[in-house]
Image 1 (tube, rainbow, N blue to C red):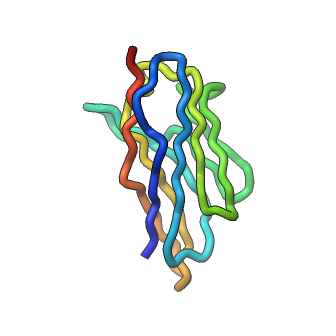
Image 2: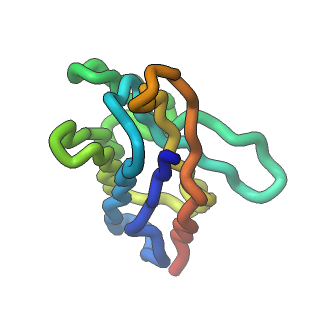
Length: 120
């Protein structure tokens, strides 16, 4: 059993910052790609940022230069530092990871989601 547990969401004013965390736990052997997605009301879920086991990162155009994704492999944790937040960043943010389980199978997992609301 593998779990992704997110934390760090909340309410912030425009221009503010938040840091999301997502920790993987359970019967895992290693983690390949990790990423953050978001889904706003009435919209499709979209990729925000991703990072592979090294340091290669990908960002949605809408968050480049404002968001930074990073990971701590020793803690099986991925972070999303969000700066200069805008109302359009309001969404439920989901952690996603490709995890190699201890029994050798690679599966894709989702976290439960954390709400980020940017409003004055």
